[in-house]
Length: 273
Image: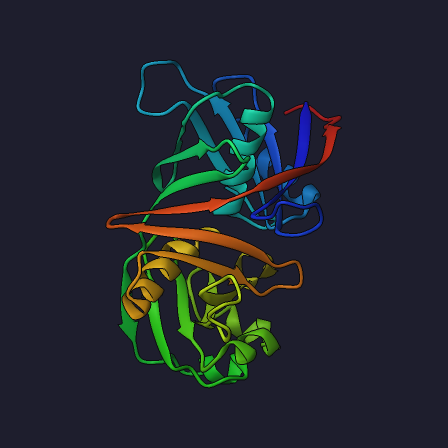
């Protein structure tokens, strides 16, 4: 079985967010235990598994994502990586529709190699800062919002970009504060720097201390910053060590996420389900 490692939300190797991708030939997913073992072995933020669906339905492919520790409801970078592989292999030539735990998702390829994902926009519910969140982050929150069911993160606005970039949070304490993780964000320090806001994502509760570039988080970051900056077309920089750019377009109940992807490893999995 062929397995790829794809760097997503970047146009160069060894940046962005790496994802494992396995395209399955059969019309069913293997046993969940096998899927989880593969994801644990790959040991990246997410490994995506996809299989084709019969023609004529509402989706073309079924898609699931696993961290090294558990299955998740939504993942942007591994969806981008999967769409990249399907187009690279010639298994898709136009828009791709996926069915997943979070509903129907779509991916469209562009002539310049970029891919645009069509994801549901996250709701944002203002909250009083939960007890301990400031101490766990090592920074004082400006605002805190809860996100939608399939994301399950706390979105924490901080004072400025420098504070976001210099955080060294207490990951053990963060794990108890949300359903999935913590997204920290601030407006860009330099309006001419090529991005409008910066973020970082910490998900120790699902086996990911810091995610390099979190596509799903941008379904919450897009409406959050669009409301503040007065624009529906924005670019986010995730300020991890690898970094990556996510272009966002807010379309009401849907958010478009655009980025590039690069295959860095193409190999063979020597174990069968």
